[in-house]
Length: 113
Length: 85
Image (cartoon, each protein chain N blue to C red):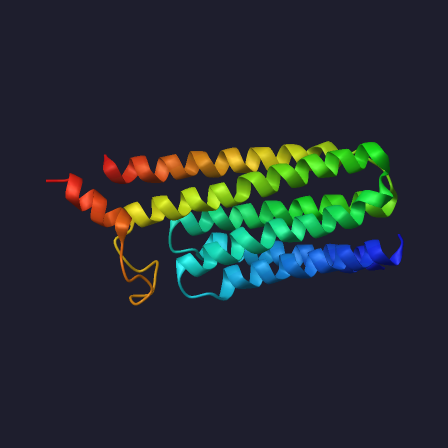
């Protein structure tokens, strides 16, 4: 492997470790979702860019498809998970002073009699 | 050498995610931790492909990306349905 590929792959691996450590160490669930949903697609982008010159044109195309799928879908999945958690759990997934105004639960309280 | 270090780092990341899967207080924590473990798996497969130069296992990476998204969305629907009914 050339040195730039090695550096990019190592950087992606370090970012993946940071995502895992953030998932393990953060106190509130919302902070854990942030750590997982932002760091891991960037980690995979780094690894895919680093690996792309080593696997030929067809392999690079497959890596690009995988990276595009991950970048398009993982933030959407994290957002859906945020919404579900916000709808279902009444408290204890955020800190108390994290929200100043809660539009989602306010709207659901207005629709429910 | 670089490949071994990178794969060891991916293993560390996936062990952190698995610890969160076992310990996690809610279902949402477990789902997102499984997602991080899947990303670590994809990175490890891509690293191995880059070190050997073979493209045999690269379709698995794309398939795992799409299947992981589908699984997360399905679990999200399950979370919302389970609370309302």
